[in-house]
Length: 116
Image (cartoon, rainbow, N blue to C red; front, top):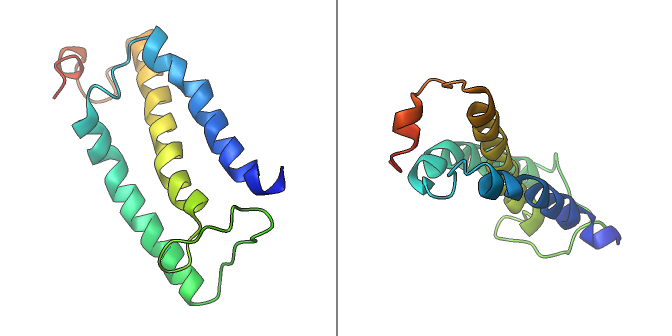
C-alpha cells in the first residue's frame, strides 16, 4: 500500500468530513465562492513554497511512497491534492462546530445561509 498511503489518508479525511455536509447541512459546497476565497490563497502560497523548496533541493518526494506522478516543477499530485483536501476538511469541521454550537465565527448565521 506504500504508494497509495498519501492518497488513502486524503481520502480518509474526505470520508470522515463528508457526512458533516450531509447530516448537519453545513452548506460548505453550496457556498463554493466562500470556500474558494478560503482555500485559494492558502493553495497558491503553499504550492509556490513547495515548488521553490523542490527547485532548491530542500524537499524531495519518494516515488516509492507516492504514485510517482509529478506535475510541472516536480510536485507530486498527492501534494497538490493535500493543499486542497486538508483546507476543505478544515472548513467543513469549522462549519460543523459553528452549526452545532451556534458560534458565529465572525459572520452571522443568516449570512451563512444565503449561499453568498
